[in-house]
Length: 57
Image (cartoon, rainbow, N blue to C red):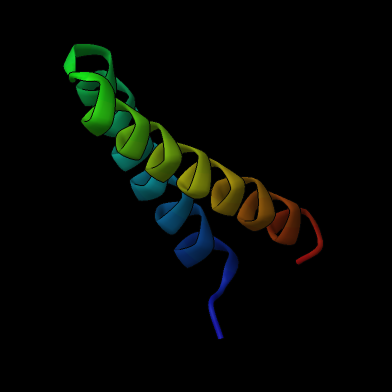
C-alpha cells in the first residue's frame, strides 16, 4: 500500500511524463500526434484519480 508521500511522488512523475508527451505531440505529425495525445489523456485521467485518492488518505 502506498503512503501519502509515495503517492505524491508518483503523481509528480506522471505529471512530468504527461508534460513531455504534450511537448512531443506539439511537434509530431498527424498519426503520431493522435497517439501521443491519447497517451497524454490516459495519463492525465490517471493523475486525476490519484489526486482524488490522495485527498481521501
